[in-house]
Length: 270
Image (tube, rainbow, N blue to C red; front, top):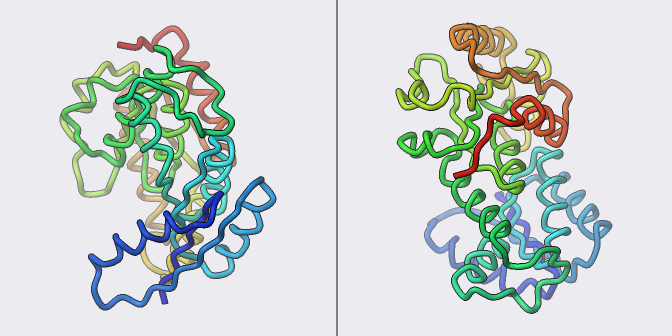
């Protein structure tokens, strides 16, 4: 049984229609939809996510309040849950296209100005560059994050994007050569992420359990993870211009603050 959770600040009918439309493309799958509507505050979100944690699955949510939407993103990342925001990117794109503010967006904290558009452009760029996609665009990134799987590349990328930075992230995978474009970008913009072996084993094991998969495979094997991180460190030593950040036991906010502090003055926006 696959579980799909639908969170909404209204009745939840819209998010359910979208989910059902997408599910029609997947035949012969056993899926149970859980609809949670009338979400009005953080307590409602925590209660809903507690339910998800008991029977993990993917979350689709439509919350027009930007603070609550961000809270969902932060909480799901902390709980190692998968979540998809179905409304915020659409609102941003429509606002940009129509050149006007969404009139029914609670908690809108900034006007439609150049800074706002820059942030939305950064988010759009970062989404498209996740996990090594479109390496030909690496030179356009303000920051390029490099690291092994589950070393916080994606959440860090998105957090920095919401601050207005175009971020690309590139995975380091044993047996695969990183894209040649990585060597061609300004090396001072590249940030290598490192993490302690046991911490990464714990994160990967939790991830596998959430997916109802066995944590006994090579992905979460201590020796395998140790080898991956050793390869990672060798790669970093071969690139002394890169900034290396240890993300062990650090929140996304703490890691981002360290990156921006140490790169301050070196990042230029196009």
